[in-house]
Length: 589
Image 1 (tube, helix red, strand yellow):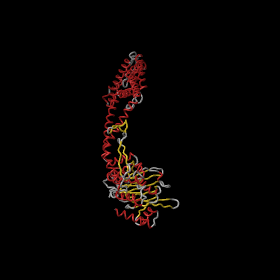
Image 2 (cartoon, helix red, strand yellow):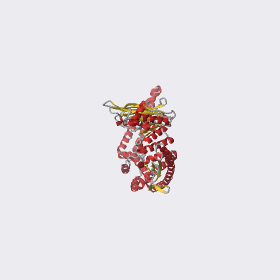
Image 3 (cartoon, rainbow, N blue to C red):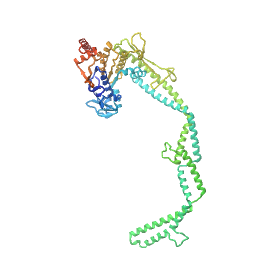
Image 4 (tube, rainbow, N blue to C red):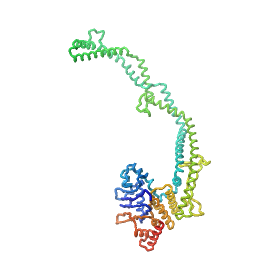
């Protein structure tokens, strides 16, 4: 028996189900009942546990939220358990506990092994644990893209490896083609952009600004504009410190400090404290002399040249004009202001101009790379076609063999692998064909239901019952090549009856020998083959309708099969037929 088993689900306030426990077991479990909505809620519940879309409409009227809880037994070293533990989940005696809560407002929360997780985590685990199939999946099988995906899934690495190489080359070709298209279609715009950049760079080059020059010129202009006041202040300060030669009676700071120093020097040997003060006054005298000398030099050197001031202002005006035009925020030079921002703009503009001026060279390079990629893609597409053609024969033969076990002994399934010619495509097999992210192939599943009948696309040539059996056959083939531990089929037997229904039940029972199988069915011929049968029953107290789930055993199971057969639980004929069905199914086991 399989290692991963869905043990049970508890459903609260979901649709017509108020509070029910769905106990499952290894093998084949059939879910039956009169209420279609109730059976649908069982499927919906499992879908929520597996990361399906939440909908506020699922919450039972009058309830604040709906809750679905599940218990799945997984091997400790299995990939599902490892991935769950990486997400912080904990196993409970080898079982993984999953819960999903949907509020009446539509909000959804998921928990895995006692840990809150994103809903996407449940969907990630679901890919390894459970395969869900219903009537919508049957309709999906009618799409050509789904048929190609089914073939690729069956082929495994024989297609996955070349497809990965093809996908990488395809993405690169798309990127190269987009860049080439952008360059060639925007040639005029790019030429105009280049002209503007050249004009700006020529204008900046004519001025030749230096880094920090604007700051230096601002300081010089300030000094030249106030030269007379600065000279007068420096002269007055020098006279105060060193004295005025024209006023021999004047008192200056230097003479006063020198007198104070002489007074202390005479007695400093008598007290260390006073000696320290004498030292400090001596230092003051030296500092005053230095400052006095610098003031004299400053006044002599100060140049109040109006011509120089005019030249400085003219240079500043030229720099200001550049800053106004090119000194805005520059990417890669955050915080740059003034001339620094202009120089940063010039650097970026020069790089961009080099790029634009190299368009012709770039167009040549891209064209060559595009042509090489198209040739490479054609070769990879041919490899995919060859792999798909070979896999299609094996897949079709396996599905055809399965249909023989599903009361379609003369049916024959084939795959058409073809391409569509397109002058803008890639060369495959000597023809120029359309291509896409998955290759150049169109894959179509064809069905000939009986000898002499032409093979037609299943979308046109298969009845509802035949489509159900084809899908089941496909899934059984997958179970042998790419198995999952648990399968859920929602009315996979739709449109089927009689002997075909018996064969479907028999085939599901066979599949259940290697996987856990849960089937929602309305056919007694299918339910009879189940190892366990669950009944979704409806109760009505006059104001509220509720559904519950119970396990059927013995007499109860016979009564339910009788109801499914004839609509009469107590009909002796129906009971006899139900018992015969059960006995026949157990004999096959």
